[in-house]
Image (cartoon, rainbow, N blue to C red):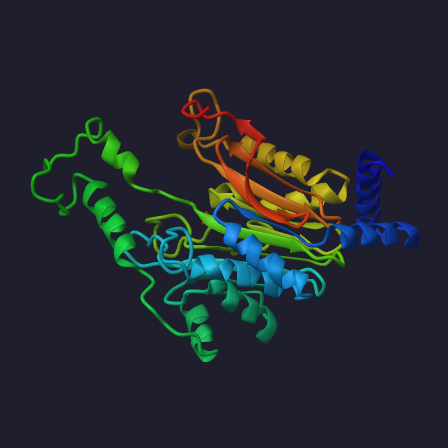
Length: 360
Ligand code: GLY
């Protein structure tokens, strides 16, 4: 079979499998394709170490969920990454609150935690919610008590670097509160002349998503984040919401999201992608389909530019059961990490809905 014919065949086979129509011969062909190509792991642009680690575990025959969690743990535990786990940017009170979800394709199970404080690896707590409770999600104090019960070490997640970034924001975000900028800077905020320093403040929806399919066609995924920087305490984004920041169906594929969680929640982003793949769309087409849903449903004037395009970014990542993968972003300039065909790399996302004017 040529590559294209094989691709079309597998695409039709995947759609048929989803509809429960897959004949034994097609299942056999799909399994053979998975075996020949080996594992495929896809992650957000900050996930190159995660895809490498997950692929290493999968090559040794490990479980897909154990693999992706071990991968993102590297980023959760890295204080230099200000979007996830230890070192993540805090809420408006200076407290780091973490969100995470996991899904295990072979057993159709899921677990999640939201607004979890003091624990570096919320993805591991999410897995324990899946394995050791009859629930899918624990939040806030309840999630922390559950983590304590399982012996997780409590630490102050706010690193000195993240505290300084938060303080910089705290002292400058309003000219009607009592927080003052360091001596030497004017008391009054002139937003125009402070444009550069305001732009320096890293407002971020940063997150890591990582999904994998192994050589047997089994899938899993994880999404983990410190969420929107300087958020209202208790704000929960898409990352811990099953169907929004993550969705896995072992018959079809897996998908995840980074970027503005509110937009992904409203459109059930990851679930929309997996269901689109079930109808026969490629991972890339399905990611674009979900982005278009966000464009069509964003009506809030404060979120729209003059030309009607959204002011925020969202990036989707997807992998199909047969190992095809794709990623698309709302705005150009994003990257994703992938392990496929035995190689681990970061790629530019070439499929976007709008082109940023400030980059080539
Ligand atoms: N996508 C991460 C968040 O919105 O919290």
